[in-house]
Structure formats: structure tokens, C-alpha cells
Image (cartoon, rainbow over all chains, first blue to last red; front, side, top):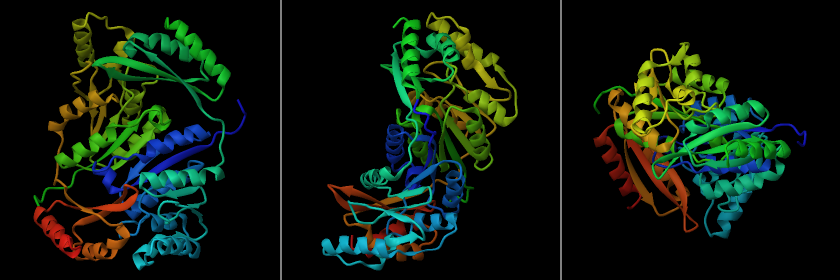
Length: 243
Length: 243
């Protein structure tokens, strides 16, 4: 135990295309894994439509409740990209073309021999007081305002922005985990597992069933920030299960 | 336009394993696609931890707001499966072993030559007043209480339950969509696209950028319940884009 504090986060995925089932969200699981690895606990994910009222309500609910809120989607050049404006509204700050963002875009388009059209300039609209998150792939930046981190929806660009913002994040005790694969239905090990949870109340234990060749098996996952306790709980559970 | 009403839904994914990034949620996109196909509009998805207070809060927020709430996960036999109890609490009804569910489980285990142990009987705990959703794969049923539909987390079982519950769902106007793949960055078509949205205000238009071989391209998606208007908007947009 480092004795560090617990740092929490939520993810907000913005986009009609996810809700229609047309596009599969790849970003939330990438962010989830990344946050676990760096010592931030993801507590909630929401997916909402490209709708200002919905985005504002979710941003307000989540940014107050967790240490960080990561959003993806809706910061492109088309009329349905309303994330930046919605977040400015939720945070109660004005929004306009940001000179720093305009410079990044101008440089990027100039390098590619393209003009900075009004549509492209739309991607330089950044809420007042935000810091920029660089986008090495297409120039158009994400931004961070307070504890809200606003990233692109395109998975490759989102990942680059997530990496770019990571050094500035406060992190806490890292949640460690051990997985014990069990070759039996979870109903057969439920009693032993439950008794073990009672014995190690400080180690979170979850059973995740799945079908393997049509037969029910389970992964037992033990989680704790304390490596010594975790190893002890896992070792004694294996013994209790005869593994 | 059928003139039918719009039927809405939310999805609640329950499970620490999704939030830790260990397991990728496959269920929400399957439910999203299914609901779109049968004429129910998915408006929101949430993922919360295996935590009674979190589950109750999300259930209460979502079941009042949408016509249906579909949940997945947390209805197995282990101590961390607390969905049924949490939903009973959220709905303000008692929960106990349900004789109908017990019968289904007893039959299933008897067929497999297994005993109905106390751990397995835990899967027969159903909130008072709920109807059961059959599970042809492993016997343990899901349930529906009011507008809340509670399904397993194992994807194969979830799909079977979703099929089983579908005939009893009220459906509305089906949202139709047309996708126009554009071989250019969305910033190049943003002006035409925005003008087209202004012209067809009753057709929802979204642009979904992605990288193809590292180059930005976009899918333009038009959505409407009115097939005639949708076709007209798509045809004229293609013309406007020179496609």
C-alpha cells in the first residue's frame, strides 16, 4: 500500500452512431485499461447522443462526482460536432476560436498544402480557460478544462491524446489484480468463493462466468492495491479450490 | 411515417470487470443494433460497478426516463452478483426465491444430474411481481419488472434472453438510415453537409470520421423514420457531393 489517495474517473462517450449500434465503441475499453494501468479507478461510463442538453447533463453529473471526466467524440468540423460548445455551456464559460488552436491547425493544413477553411477553423473553437491536448495525427487539438478532458472519437487519435494528457494526471494507488481461471461452473465454487471474500474483506473478489465450447466456466478476479494481501488471498483461494 | 409513437430505451451494464478494462463489453452494441432493428431508440448507455448504491441510483434514473431499461450482468450464483437484490430495492419490492424460477433451475440441474445447491438456488431470487425471461442455455432465468428487463452478462445467454423478451416489447417507428461513404476528410464536405442538414431538418445527419490507411475519410449517416424523405435527402446529398 502506497498510502496514496484513490483517484477516480468517469468516461463519457458522445455519439449517435454508438447508440444506433452502427459503430462499436472501442474507446471506453482502451481508456479503462489505460486508467487501471496508471492508477486511476474508472467508476462509470456513459454513452449519450449528439444532443447539447444530454451532453451538458452528463458532464455536470460526472465532473462533480469523480476526479476526472474523459470524453470522446464530437470535436470535428461538421455541424453535428457539438461537444466543445456543450462543454463550455456545462462549465459556464464562453467559447470562441482559440489562437493557439488556430495556429496548430494553420500549421498542419499549411504543411499538407490545404487552406484553413471556416469548417476547419470550427475545430479551433475551445472553451475559455482550457489547455490544449496536442493531436499529432490530424492537428485538431483536444482540450482540458478543469477536470474534464475532451478527446476525439477516432480511436487512433483518441489514443494519441490519452497518451499526451497522461503526464499531467494525478494518479493514486494502483489497483492490482490476479485472475484464477476455474474449469467449472461458478455455481460449484460459489460457497468457497463467498467464504473467501468474507475472510479477505479488503480484497475485492468477482466471478466472471463465460461459456467455453458451450460449457460454463469462470474467471475469478481478485483486486487490491496491496500486493502482499492480494498474493496471500489468491494463494489461499487456489488451495481452497484444490488448484 | 407510420405515425406510431417513438419508443425509447436505456442500457445499464453492471460489472467491475468492464470498468477495469479486463473484459470488453460486447452486450451494449448487440442490444443497440437489435433495438434499432425492431423500432426502439436507444438513448443512453451506462456502465456501473457491482455496487448496490450505484446500481440502484442508475436504475432509478433510467427507468423513469425511458420506456425500457435493459440491464446485463450480476445475476449469477456468486456473492458479487447483486443485481436482482439491487433492482428489488430500486423498485421498492421484496425479493425471495421464486417458485417458478426454482422449478426452472431444478429441472435444468436434474437433467444434467446435478443438485440444486443453495448457491444455485440464489439464481432463483427474483423481485416480487416480476415475470421471468427464459434462459435456454443454462436454466437460470432473467426477469422483467415493470419496464426494467434484467438479463445475464454472458453474451450468448444475454442474446438468448433478448430474443425471448422481444415479442413482448412495444415498438415504435423504426429509425431508418443511409450511409454515404466519402473518400475525403470531413472538413472538405462540412459546408455542403451542414447546408444539407439545414435543408432537411427532419432528417438527422451525422458525420463519422475515421482513418483509412492513415488518411482521414468519413461516413455520412442520414437517419429518419420516413423512408421517402430519407431517400430524397440521401440522393440529393450525393448529387451535392458530386458522388
